[in-house]
Image (cartoon, rainbow, N blue to C red; front, side, top):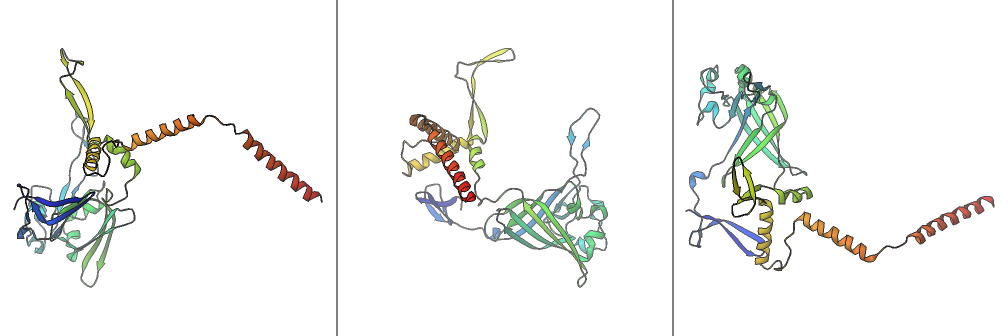
Length: 321
């Protein structure tokens, strides 16, 4: 059933989201029907291998072009949309037959994924891999999947997690630690990867610098043809002006209007950004100081000198006696 997820906003500044209901086009609220085929869960680790250097292509073209080495995708091994049993062959011949630089990831499997968020609200993932009989390490040669963990510059990893209920989430990660060990009881190589996110978590503390940057985010230029301004464009003259707007500032004004419409703020409340608020406070302080006038601090200075002299005299009298 088509429709957006129902959101209750009758609690002033609190929004209650009901994922089991949807809003229909006619304004009615109905139960949300879940597609049974979407009730699946999976995890996929992928990356794009980067070259060890950048080549300058051509004698006249001085632009640096990046040459990719290969792709790794655990859900699409060797560029296929399904898993095969080719990994059971004694020798892996997929890399010599395929036209693209897709490295077979069927030789290395994910056994466990651990997620945690520390005090800095940085997402950290620990992924355990298992290489059966070391085939991914020894049989693939230069096309081994291990090159993703030792290739410089380090590639960017993408981890996609899909829970049983809901949509998939894709994280952009970088490799922090790599640890490999040989398990003598099974004959397999066990790999432990520690990856961290580039960006901080959504539920982190907001820094003051972030608030400063909001009004200047997403700049757009708007052309007004009805203006009397004259701008020379090649040989033609056109009467128009260019005004600059910021989507961040528009969002701030939009939030002020929502608060005023719900009665959380008075209608005459000024719509200020952090910068404008600080500027008003500075002007208020400067104006208040001017109204107080200038005051001489000589009595305080004389008092300090008198107290110091008296203490020195007291010390000399005690020392001489």
